[in-house]
Amino acid sequence: MQSIETVTTQGRRRAALRRTIIGYSFLTPASTVMILFIFVPVFMAFYLSMFEWDLISPMRFVGWQNYARIFGSSDFYIAVRNTLYFVLVQLPLDFGISLGVAMLLNQKIRGLSFYRTVFFTPVITSTVAVSAVWMWLYDPFDGLFNYLLELVNLSPIGWLNDPKWAMFSVILMTVWKGLGYNVVIFLAGLQNIDSSLYEAASIDGANSWQQFRRITLPQLSPTMYFVLIMGVINSFKVFTQIDVMTPGGGPLKSTMVIVYLIYMRAFNSFRFGEASALSVLLFLFVLSLTLLQRFFLEKRVHYN
Amino acid sequence: MRKSLLIKKLSIHFVLLVMGAAMVLPFAWMVSTSLKGYHEIFRYPPQWFPDTAQWKNYLEVWKLAPFGRFYVNSLIAGISTTAGQVITGVFAAYAFARMEFWGRDKVFMLFLATMMVPTQVTLIPTYIVMSKIGWIDSFEALIIPFISSAFSVFLLRQFFLTIPKELEDAAIVDGCSKMRFIFRILMALAKPAIASVSLFAFLGSWNSYLWPLIVINSNQMRTLPIGLRYFVSQQGGGSEWHYLMAASLIVMLPVLIVFFLAQKQFIEGIAKSGIKG
Image 1 (tube, rainbow over the protein chains, first blue to last red):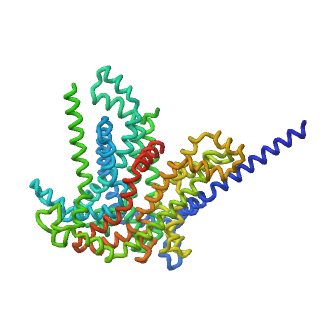
Image 2: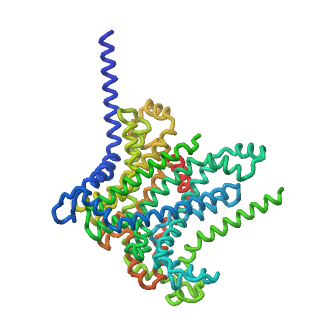
Image 3: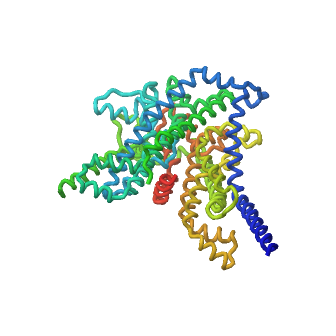
């Protein structure tokens, strides 16, 4: 009896070991790539941020100097301010319009898939290509937008060439391009709300504002939370349209965002240590924002 | 009651149509400009229809920059990345969804955590590694770092979880090996999930910008977005908007065609991943 028991535990242990080996061998291809191109580079970024290096001459350890230099330079504050401006204008616009459109599309109307396609098409098109199109729309002399302004008797705007308007122009294009994504997400969230909740509410005499406030908002809050977090993170990563539409950081550095500053420090000034320090800061910033948002929203978010 | 409902529906359509028109306007203006002659683009007031459609603009663009080559580069990078993500993803997703082993869930959390790391953070170290191993300006640099993605693994895993385990047990009892089950049965059943993973992987590669911008130096190796970017900076300072708009359309067109053919996968894929993510 005893010997059989030891044999079975041994066998069980061997089977578990075998399962573990097979399991990890299935994970090996995917995890090798992730280790090499995500985990190792993250640690390398921390490491490199302590050095001064142009990739050619030998690396020189400088400790926290790169960080000190960043916090002592006006470019950093300009980039932070521009990025914050981008987030604070782009996100509410995108959020408000896409929620509004999704709520209209949720009213059991005809042609739903047609409208959805119309709003979604810019999402999948190349950012560089639509940036080129919007540069032409924004052209201060021959662009369509200034012509339209003229039609309603408004004075023309310098758009991308005017330091006061450049960032707003980039934001407008970004909202146009990204809207459809959130429309689809919000629409899916709205369609998941149990319609009997609305029926019960209207029987009880709740008006549409009360229904929105008491049913839609709490039921949709997980979706809103998702859209908000993704929106903030994506805003902090904005680069493509900035680089194409306003090369060099825009007029008077008015569109120089954080990622653009990283790009300039590394590939224009060849200060890879300082650029790494900047990317570490970006990483910590995005991470802490995610955690902070989670902390504050957790209590207000309604989960089923 | 009926009348007020009708008015409500009509006003909803009115608002949506106005906004929809704003969404379509840039595309329409692009097509219109791309078919104009040089002098027509500056005509005042602007016109929607050119006197005669200048289809030759599209041929001119092809001569001004090697867009054919850019296409081939983007296709090679896109197809390889997609194949890589599907293959590595199916194996990893199968392990996470169907196998039981020590540390599985912790490793899965680590996979998910990679989605929180912005690519901008890994950019410089990865660039340095690439330059040290001589992969700058190569397909390896465009493909290898992207042949696996946590998002693809996640999507596939969620789908695999919905497939009843009894199916695999039955197949194994019938003498089907694990590999055979994965390739013949699981992947056939998971076609919708594989389709969405492929769409996202291909689109991600096709539209990627910052990484190819820094890692590609030669005109010959440029992908479409990078090729277009340099074309914009060459022409944009000037005024050849008709060529620029034709080039933009050339870059957009393949993805637009795929999108109109496979809209359902695109939109449902996003709706599902968004909600569950």
